[in-house]
Length: 501
Image (cartoon, rainbow, N blue to C red; front, side, top):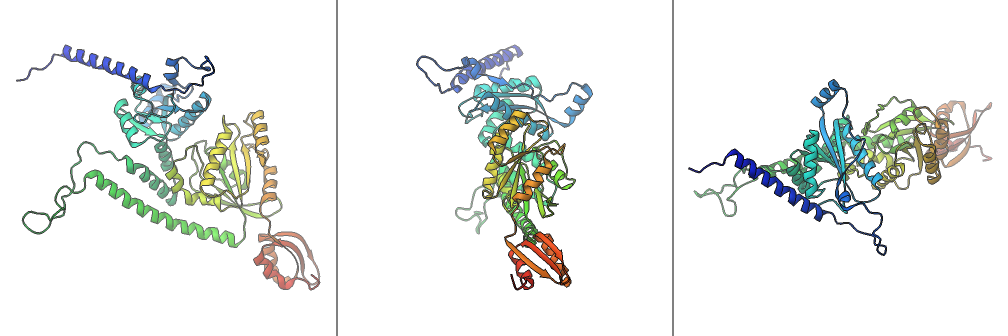
């Protein structure tokens, strides 16, 4: 019989092990910190103390934990309790904190309760555990201290980083991409929206499937003739469970792509119908929660869902509107963009975002009250480039002007040549914006004067609906119409052009 160790010996060995781990963590922490110094003679720049630079820096004001006990208890029942962690590789500490604050807003939108947030200053994320091995153990202590059940990382983690960090912190680890996909899954309402989100989730999940221990084979190799049971090179294990799962996911992805392609055809037919009627189109694009749906409602009275949440709109809403001069056009509300929008999400939503590429004018909405509006503008333009809408004219609409800092508004209006400050909430600047849309929309090319008999009332109506009527006079012979129209309508009006013209 083997002798078992006493509880006191167990405790002693556990303490020794913890001490060893702690020493190893300290050593690794020292290794992790590889800073690039800007040497100026003997002066080493305005640097933090080494230990302060290496530390996990707590970001203030991120916690959304509530004081009211009953409400806290209720939220604990239904919400995941999360700690956020980011790696600050470039820019100022303010940039890093803004990025983590946005992650906190994303986590809340997904239905989480943010308990704490930390950032670590590094040249680049650690290839093994994202924040460095020593810091990962410190993060585990923060998780234990706060009672969190999930860690959310402000970046896209490789499958290896995800597994290694989970092994250290002992709770679920989620990266920014998975969080955004989760929000999209919650907000997708239409069949197409749901299909696009499912496709993006499967693309994300495929390389991250994790086999627990040795997965047993689901089937044996193909059996051939003879008593030995299998032909040459066919014996041995068949697919493991993880391989079966991967194959099923790939099959499902192929099916989803076919379905999305079919749905795209239906939307393309509607778009062609609008083009045939020569109705100009305006797309509202912008950062998530910049106020795009509020602006659409203000311009058209559409009654679209308006919610102070990230990604409240996923399914494109197209509404008909009229300019002050009476020209008809369509307004399309699109999916909100966000910094580092996952690439496969852009791919999945490419069909939806084509509304932007096919429009005659883009209203690029930016939140004027946001701490870094220029960053939002840059992030949206990157996605607009991805969907191939580089040649479409753009008006920058600086929204929430009633809540923005006047100096920030002045700066944005100076930097962005083609811009206007509005407030969708109060209606400030909306009339000026409508006039600007009217001026920017493409005008029909052909200017024509025609004398239409009163029996041709349908052509007069078409000139009003599809063109721009400059003057209209009712004479004894018929309606004398001077208008700008497109080529197709000009051909229909040609027989009625007076001979002198």
